[in-house]
Image (cartoon, rainbow, N blue to C red):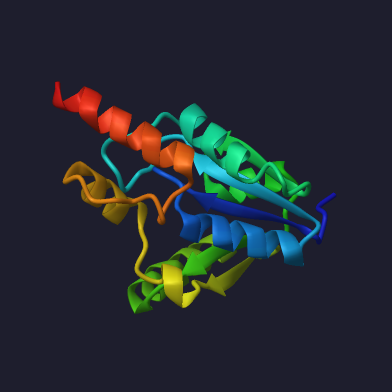
Length: 167
């Protein structure tokens, strides 16, 4: 039996950004249970900077104050994962028209697989409308200050990871 107040917020979260956390926090205020689904190995990305377990830990740390948020790693189709956690909706953030185009296609494919799982979109706040994990990694690679874009532990870990990779 699915719980109509349970949703999934999926993503690669490599790394989790303050924009991601804003969408998760806002979702937590709207729904009874938010399951943050960390994609184990994203299809659209060759290699992740952090393992799925590391990404999960970053999100758990950042959302520790949200009692109705849990974090799980998944390696199957998103719709199948949503069924496993008894969710009735998938919540994603939208930043720009390009996000809408991609997410519209994904929503239709997900609906074809399971018409009982809705797609819900939350618009990014203006402060985060430009923010992406890819952009954060690129900025960090060239030494830019990312401390206001990601949680502090993520900024430190990313700097450490990039330094280690340079050696």
